[in-house]
Amino acid sequence: MTMGIILQGGCLCRAIRYQATDMPFDADHCHCNQCRKSAGAIVMSWMDFNTDQVMWLQGQVTEYASSAHIRRGFCQQCGTTLTYRHVDYPHYCTLSIASLDDPNKVQPTYHIYTNEQVSWLTIDDTCQRFNSNKTSV
Picture 1: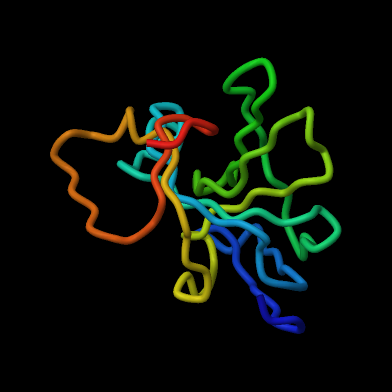
Picture 2: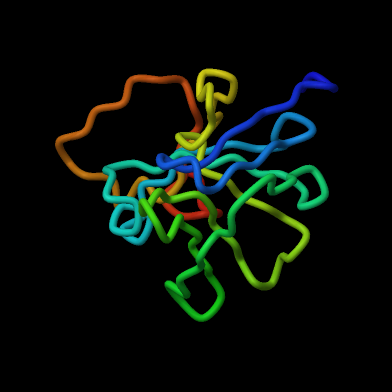
């Protein structure tokens, strides 16, 4: 990952803006049902940072507790999915790749929860695949 690169992004209505001081340490495509439902998309692509690498420039993310330990963040004005947060890991910040001003700058390297992937979707890439968050396919 290249030092000094700043990624910027935000929601559709521009009420929420952020920047990252470096490239993410990880990025994935998630096929789980909760990501699908919360984002209204067949696949959700995420990028992971340490919290000190992300600065919120304006606005505030509204969070929804989708389970006992998971908080999903969105813009209350336009509904854009922005964040995923596990309460047991407060030093990590997971952001939606789609929320980047230039999503071409971050490419996921693996797929998770492929056992929940919709049957009609064919993805022909070389990324590693996992049935869950931990089990290799």
